[in-house]
Image (cartoon, rainbow, N blue to C red; front, side, top):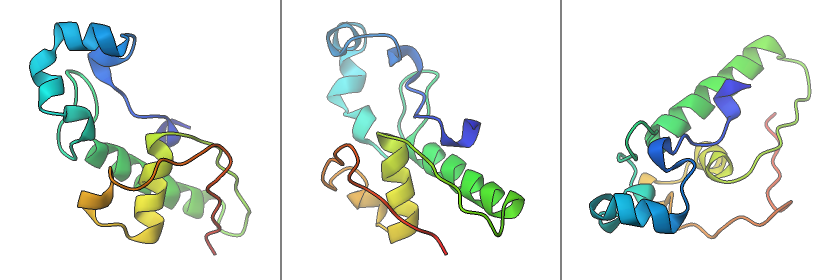
Length: 109
C-alpha cells in the first residue's frame, strides 16, 4: 500500500553515500537526511512521511474497523509509526535508538 512505503529519498535513492556526498556535499553538510523539514531533491521530508503514514492508518481503520491488520516494515516507516503511536516530540524523531529487526510490535485497539 502506498501510504506505507519507505521514505522517498529522491535523487539519493540509487546512490551510495559516497556518490551522494560527491554530488551534494552542501546538502549532506546541512544533515538534510536528519532534518524534519528538509529532503533531497525530488524526495520527501520526514514530516511528509509521518503525514502519509497517519493518513494510511486512518484509511485502514475506516476500511477494516473490526479487523486485525498486520503491517510489516522497516526504517523510517517504523519511526513514523512510533512517532504517531507514542506521541513522540518532533525533535526526538531522529535521536531515538535505532530499531532492530523484529523488535517493535504494537497493537492499536
